[in-house]
Length: 257
Image (cartoon, rainbow, N blue to C red; front, side):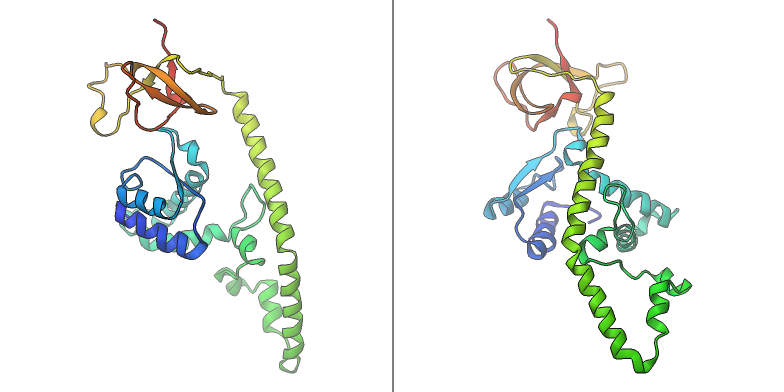
């Protein structure tokens, strides 16, 4: 959707997620108005879907989607060159290319992890890859034998599919562990406790834009009302009014009175 709306997102969730893959246990969205709309909330409520929202200015809360979107954008930029208006037409091609490309986390293509075999891509028809050559050079009398061999090889691939998925999950977990270790080495933890006074970064979107370049980037103080998880907090004003949404510890700092 070039311009997502609440109704459009609701229809997408129903047709492309629920009707194709079943009812999910939870959905993690950003704080865009299309996702926080009544239509989306009603759909999730009616189907017992836990609708969660990422912390403000903290895309890591939905890191898998953001990482995928980054890959899609990089691929689209290469294909579109200077024609930015036709990105929707090029999106299926970009998705196809990424689904047929091995990832660093798993070492395999998403296509093979779903279907148990590699997709036949157009370039293989141009250069006659070994499997294309093997399928096009058999003798007609040996067609039945070739079909049996192909069926046996395909069943063997499907038998190993679950094992391949488990190995990919282990590789992905190890890849994530290495990245997390490297990230944590360069991060200084700033834990906050319930009741602490903090300042938060001003929200630069919508009505809360700063008044000028020389104005402060921080506002407050606010009170840590709840510690929801690692580096995730719920803030309130001094009169007890809760601030909407959750806030990342990266966007708040301690206030010293």
